[in-house]
Image (cartoon, rainbow, N blue to C red; front, top):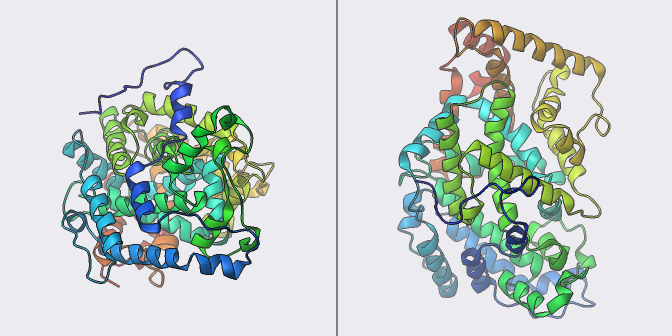
Length: 498
């Protein structure tokens, strides 16, 4: 049931699984469908910007900001998968925007023919069974690995959101992952995964259009037409708008940021999208293995399959998908190594990584344990990633008392697990401890009654019900669930609508 075109074949040692020439090409390819949709909505960029002050720069683009607001209002009605299948434009939506969105949905809202409903259902069950542990791995492994690639970090840095509004960004990521991985999220009309992914796809296209101030395909065509100069430093350079430096508005910040197309390829290009999806699927599974909680080969394949379906919906080409942990490990290593080789000055990665760690620490109420998310991230991501994003011991020191406490707990837990599994294969104190950490992330970052997740109410209610059902670990004996009850705040959770 896997995609068959362009299978990933092992290459000679050191070359990775995909040819370098192909990956170089994919840096200049993004998402033609979504990019064409946003280009139709925003129109061509031909304005002269030299000499304009901040107010004038923003005023000149006012029609574009208004059209983006209209798109946002329109897709706010895409609450569940049935909504995108049967969507009809509201009467107040301009006709050209309505036509662009109708064409987009007609080409984007169907699952790929190779999607396997049984594998997707099993992946959803795995996510549900691990509950808060899944959230701990998302925040302490998947998100940190996202920031390793400088160009990806630069896009986040351009919005100013991860340093200034880190918690908002963390919650936005959860608002994408939860609808995809909840029961029925991708494969049923009542699920919200497809609807949410199609919104994200348009957001990616908007980011590209604003950074390049034009349609990506046209920008790449113009760059290609320049001939041998394409490889020259500064080729395809989109000049930053200094007058708007420091603007708090995300759209204005992207519009003002500038981009080095010839050096960096397209923002959110095919290679970067594939890497990002691997951080959610492969890195989650790798984290379970690191903690001694690895899944069966079937469950790992099911999880990778579900994220491949999601990748297809978000516009990733099938040849950039991996179907086994061996393929995923090799492809992830290759894409990460290529990303690391592209330096950005100033390097945005360390400020992003440290901001994330501060946010996670703030979610932990006990002072002695506030360093635990950072120490867990170092263990899950490894020394190289920790250095890249500025959370290693040299860049972000941790008091020796916290390191000693964390180390003693990990050593004791591993010993108890080894002994306990002699009597029960499912026994795991590690699982309980990481679940307790995840409970605090869920409670403080995702379940705050004053700041509900930015999701349509039907989907938000489903998320609350899912989280409320995480109250007890079905794999743990009663005494371990009692231990969880004593160290978490899950008693505050409420599945009723707020």
